[in-house]
Length: 237
Image (cartoon, rainbow, N blue to C red):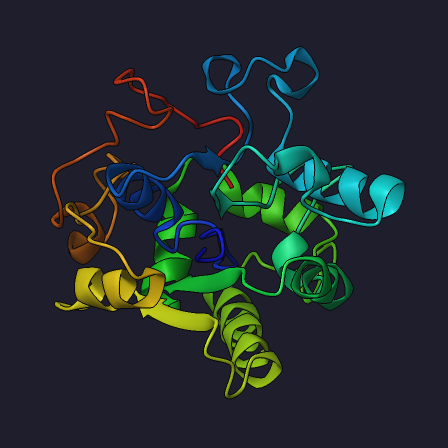
């Protein structure tokens, strides 16, 4: 029997996490994106809980970060940008190593956009930059992140560290979401057809850089797998 397919995204917010979630759902994977929606599980203790919180609960209470996420095949957005209690599992190498140890077959993806483009998208998304500056984030301490130069350096550092951490690992995929062959790369990596690729959760801010507003087919109309549109502004990370 082939090992179960599990996919975890380590990309930063606004790097294409919702696009990846939609693509994986269309590939028939059960996806947790940012927080658990009530219609996704019968377990009431998981309803509206952040994916990142569940990863740490599993790590420290069950020695397995995925202990409370067994029914999900993929995790697309795992961070939570909260001012007092931010959670950034994609920067926690101890947690990532624990996942690898407990689930050797897990496939890790890092959705990627050009650092300047990604920085501009963060700037244009409601008050995201203000929250970045106020939150204690690995690599971006309180008081940093207001300027483009600071955000770009942080973004570049995150992806460079991922490349070094996973160097030569066939279970890791650096995925430029805007590449013409992004869908083919993802399909080859997970070993199944990916029938959709585009841009979901598009920022409608009129000041957004053109290349962030012009791609794809708009906001994700299937963010919870039920066909209902999910809008995440307050909690968007």
